[in-house]
Figure (cartoon, rainbow, N blue to C red):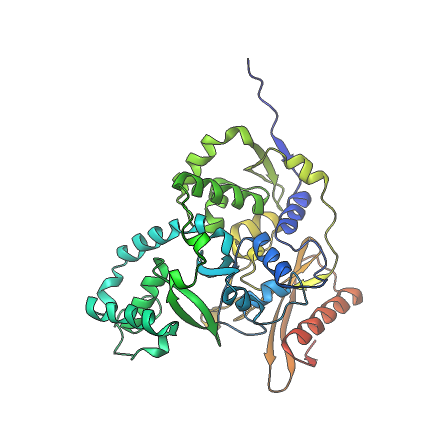
Length: 394
């Protein structure tokens, strides 16, 4: 006879604290940072999303700086150049620890299927020209898109416009034939994958079942708790039905939990069987106020953000200016385990200043002198990071 165990209920505050702890935002972002420590941060959060927009700092640099403020620009690219990390596609272009590669390469087939469905080959050069592109890279070493003659691009309206050779380079990158060797001024340089990925990772054979198990176990570890959809969306490297199959096969190592949402309702989730021990070891997060990047992993899943923190956040860079609720590029403000506001700030690098253009506090947040001092201190720290001496407009 089996006895059904009662479902564990996690309070909203403990759920928020566990999520922040798993994503490296519970502790003060201080301490010496070397290559091993930086790789540990990337490993801990799973991956770092890349983005070209540089209002204060580019997303990947800002994300890592939020976890250790001794981080400096180009340190992430040094991991890629040193073959400690590789670049590929999660939700977008991202950097992952190199040790993940044997479990990640199933993504190549998934991306190939998606690209074929979107009929990319219609926009690529001829097979002869594609072979010439690969042969040039094989002969000359790493090359960027600028090394190839730009011919008239596609008239295709959806997505980013690009010339045919860029479609070819990206196709080979998505499908694992080419890899990012490094970036210079954020421009990607491609090389043959066998020239980038160390042989011990490139040649390691892992069954697909083990890859799916790795993806699910490591997603849940970094989430702390989550639905099957949460687990699938974390990496976006497995299908939802594959996650569901994994869940059924591993019920003995999982428990059902009820997570209290910010509005008092409860949603069902899964967690590892040692969750109670993890919760008992949790400490209150630092009370430091932090300006987070819109692409930070804690912000990226908007539904999870809303459920846990009651923080309704959207990136409005593609929203026409007249229809924006807040602004083009607005940064969430985290204090302890609460999102207390959002700020629109922009670097004026020539003037060496950060200009605060708008500031919104969340309903119920008291605008005290102490809180404003915390915000000022964070802006000053950001200024030191990006080389801005003055804070204007606060």
